[in-house]
Length: 394
Image 1 (cartoon, rainbow, N blue to C red):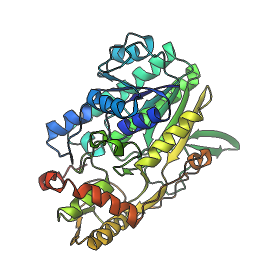
Image 2 (image 1 turned 45 degrees about the vertical axis):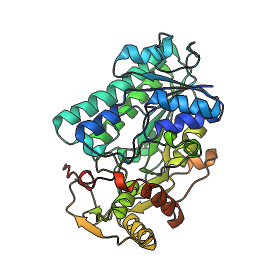
Image 3 (image 1 turned 90 degrees about the vertical axis):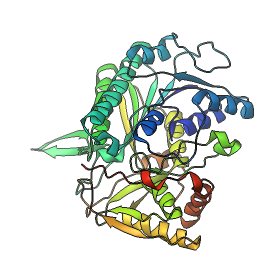
Image 4 (image 1 turned 30 degrees about the vertical axis):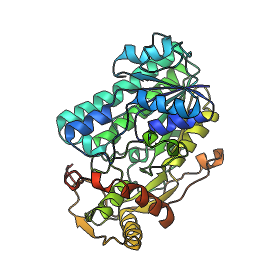
């Protein structure tokens, strides 16, 4: 199977590329280095430097003999997206530059991924809207025009749902109204402009499914944590991007860095905000199982991609417990919440579908967190305290 990974340079994109390549797929990745450029522009820290995509692909080939083709280009431009499907592609790296053919599976990660980034000011809001919606729309039309049978796997977000006072079903809800019944997308109520664009992505692809019988799986993912995957251990240069700042760093990764450099854990408000989380290795499993078990033509299939739920306070206490065992004096600081969000709320999402497909969950334990501490400690001298908290307000 030929798998095309959009956003293949990112925190999830590059590990996904290696994972699929290891499992025998023909893999092409495309990216425009949005995240790297944003980190440079905003002067936020990465824990360590990572090679360019062509350099990473070369290292991967040297270790495995497997090729990951690379395209560096901006998918907001329709012709760049369409070149990935019509054979007019210009590779930035490939051992064999012959076009592999239209992809059977497209994994769509190519989005601005940060809620705080989307609300820095109106300019960054515009960047988020333009990038996320144009890329998704360009993908939808390219698949319609060149690869109707391709399976689109889009990375959605649990943040689309918000925190409703009812159980969150897997994407859909049955409604009875005035004696009649129908099935609708579960109500969305995003808490940021970034999450709003993800709702719009879902609606765009639902339109494509209804109009043109596209096949789409939408993975409503919670915050991801972790650094190591089965493939990153082959070579230091194959590690994924790791951010620890407020803008691009996910909360567990961020808390571990803060504990190591004696920076109080930044808990917003009361800390009762509860979300669903998953290990980076489970992201790889989930996307792989979705690819192996395609949605049907004319189907928008939705899975809630989480493995367990925690409140912010629970994560902070776990970080403190593990950190203190490693000799750190971990402090927790409750800050005035810069975000407009419910801090005490009901949260009970369903997340059985991917487990039914065969995903074997990894759970967040003290041991798992300790292993993350060990990796981050190797780069302690690279950590800049000044970039951890930026105070972006909604």
